[in-house]
Length: 116
Image (tube, rainbow, N blue to C red):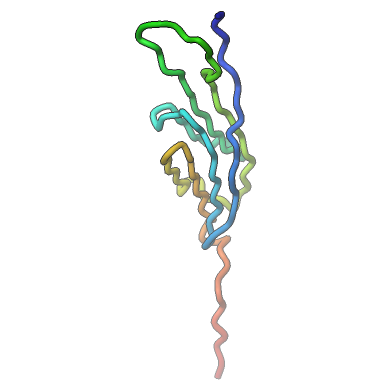
C-alpha cells in the first residue's frame, strides 16, 4: 500500500453563537493534540490551524489504512468590535472552543436616567 500525502481538512464548525457579550466558536478537530494547535490574529483575520498525525505501527503492517495525516486550517474575519487581547481558547476531547470577547465599549449597557 502506497503512502499518501497529508490532506488539507477544514474543521467541522459545530456552533458559532453569542452569549453574554461573547462570540463562541466550537470546532471539531479529531486526532489533534493541544500542542499541535495554533490560533492567531492578524489585522481582521482569526486563523485556526492544527495538525493530526497518524499513529505509527511499531511492528507489522496495515491491512487497511483510512485514517490520514491531516492539516486543519480555517480563517474567520473578525471586526473591530472584538477585543483581540481577550481571545481565549480551550481544547478538550477533540473540540476546540474559541471565545471572542467584545470590547467593553461595544457591549450593551443600561443608561441610568437622572432627574430632578
